[in-house]
Every structure is written in C-alpha cells, then in structure tokens.
Length: 194
Image 1 (tube, rainbow, N blue to C red):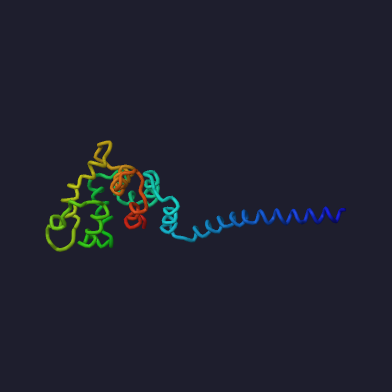
Image 2: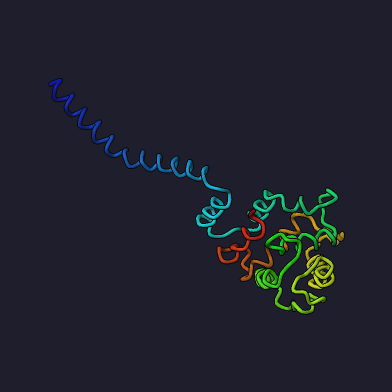
C-alpha cells in the first residue's frame, strides 16, 4: 500500500512540475529580457519602450526630455528659465545637426520639415547668400516664427522647461490627439536623444 501511495505521490509531483514549467519559463524570460535591456544603450531601450507603449503623452515626453539635460545646457545663466536669446540659441544649436556652428541648407530642409515651419524661406533667412545660416541671420528671422511668445503661457517673457517641452510636443502632435505616436515621435532621438 505504501508503495502505491508513493507511486501516486511521485506521479502527482511530476504532473505539478510539468504544469508549472511553462510558468517558470515565462518568469525566467522576463528576467532575461530585463538583463538584455541593461546591455542596450538608452536610445535602444527608449526605442523598445516606444514599441511597447506605442504612444507618449505630454508627461512622458517631458520626463524623457528632462532626463537629457538639454534644457540645462541652454540655460546659460542657470536661472531655470530661457529668455528670448537663450530660447533662440536652443533652436540654433538643435538645428545645427552636425554641430559645426552654422546651419547648412541641407540641415535647414530637414529641420523645417520636422518642426513644421512650412512658411520659412531659405533665401530670406540666408541674407548673405553663402549657403549657411550664422547665428545673426538665424536670430533675425527665428523670432518671427512666434514660438517664444506663443509658448510663454504665463507671459513672463521666460520659457520654463515645461513650457518648452509642451511647445515641441504640440508641434510634433500633428494629428492633435494629445498623444505622440511612433511617426510623430520619430524626431526625438535625432534632436534630443543624444
């Protein structure tokens, strides 16, 4: 009789183990994926998060941007605000994709499309006709886009990091659904993800 009980008990244990095996494998798979994420760069992980999330709301966009510390590098006087000069400079630095201190016609074509500045005319901005925008040329026409005053929600002539990200978020939310989907969010890494 004891032998039969042991046999039944052994069979039950085997069956229970067999039933639990898929669950254990599933749990172990999560740990493996998490370990793989640690080996990926931030940009790669962020891209994977985007696949999972599919959309980003304004709060998620702000958190990602704040973690980049781009805003802090533009705030030259460390007062946690961008005055109009710092604001303009932030875009000049951002739009100078190769970081050579000037914006080429090729860079211009890319950024005006990515930021929805359809009414901007290269020849009007490149006043000396040398094929590049220097900071002085950029400043003269950038103010006419009107983003500084439009994004300054509290009308104190200063742009907070939250106002700045809200402005860019609204530019890229082309369908106006208050979510950035993958096609709208695609520009983030090019301009702010490094």
